[in-house]
Length: 193
Image 1 (spheres, rainbow, N blue to C red):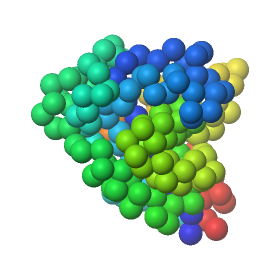
Image 2: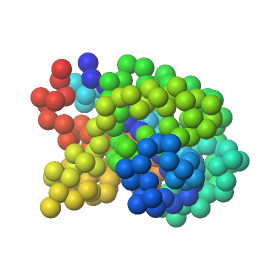
Image 3: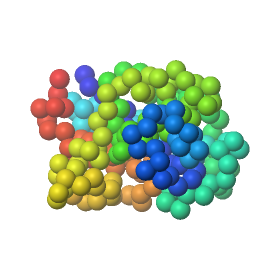
Image 4: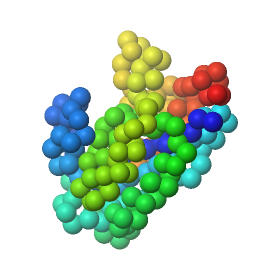
């Protein structure tokens, strides 16, 4: 059975993607963007079923103040609902059990941000497990369906595929939209083992 862990991160600061694109997860740019929110769910690719949607705000003074005009995450939310990094890492490790792939919209970026954060918080083995899985990037898969093969934004891909949209740049909403897009993008022959 193929199960994908779909992930999404919201960073504390806006990211200049040119400074990190193609760089390894240990590049300083990933650490400096901070992590304010992470979400994940599992997708049973044979059944097209989404399970166990999980989201965590992070209240971590070492991440610094949140100044990301794109994210729907605020300092107040993180202060009020922020979870302990150890709890988040343990929950993510449990979610990874049985997963055969990792997915997301621009999943390479999210894997690097999350791996960098996990290593900094003392949980490098969870990041290693995450990085060991093959990736299914909805942004790259979706490019085959767009004019000129352009990388679509998540909401644009949802609209193209007929997937209902939620307010973007909230990790929980984004992970659900990416999971639904993944199901639509994989032909049935690729969903079943």
